[in-house]
Image (cartoon, rainbow, N blue to C red; front, top):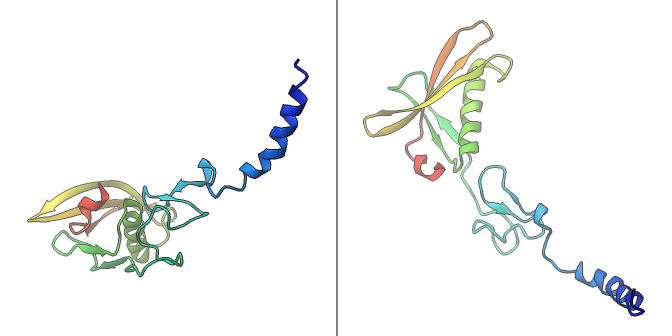
Length: 149
């Protein structure tokens, strides 16, 4: 082992803490947002998003909402204010839970498929209850369908 190795090691240990002061988070801290494929940096929330202002506050966004009962294809529930697949699924789940009870206890999703009605895109969610009964819920997702793909 060369005699200069201990000196080299000491210099590395001396300068190593200075390298940690950078404001770049480790890769494992930059994670996808829960509701989308967008990246979120907890050290700098606005780094990857255009919906956060200079102070780091989220700009006003509409709240997710489901209008209508969704019990038939002629009167589907219309989802608004949702911009991701996960948000859509949560809105649908909340809508069904308001009618049937808690998901997993009172009902569970059996199938989901797309259907068109005129120029509207309808997602049909078939749920089953513990007794074995099934019920369809119809959601008009035309307005946001392309943003979820």
